[in-house]
View (cartoon, rainbow, N blue to C red):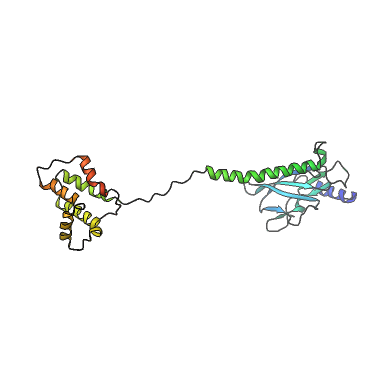
Length: 267
């Protein structure tokens, strides 16, 4: 930057110091400034690149209770001088920021103008570009490995949902049990006896090929050695007063052949 241009820039910025104090940063090292904007969202100019004399980044945006926004800006200068951050900012819709108050900043340098940046002055003397590059590669490699490892570990430690258990229908023994227990107490009603016969008929119909009418089928079922065992026993409890009262084990044994048969509700 020539001396004349520098002096003109300084005078331009001095006229705006009342609106915004001048922030300062060393060349090649990020500086920070906070500004207030009544309306609109800011962003960096899209045409800026690494060869631009000044780079900028919106670090954070905060809403103000009284309206408007506070913008935390980070800027990086590659050339010493006095600049106006409005020149590297635009509104999100592409509009110019010329209506904003000047945002003066100064980039200072302790080296010659042709030097890359002053960042080397802040580094330990023994550090080298090669060492920093190797360290960066190691850090990237560690992060590359840790990220999927963390994701996999979280998935493994995540509580598994309980398996969905489909409710089964009652077994035939569960449907017969209250009827058989009522018969054991000699309190089985006629409708309950009819239901007991219906359950047994439903179960043995296919095995015994009970194709005749219901009364004839139940009569044949009663005479069958295996299929008629429960029906004959229940009838003896109901109609033979000399029959001893059955125990719980007797009832359980009588229902045992039907305990594995899963059914829906038979009506």
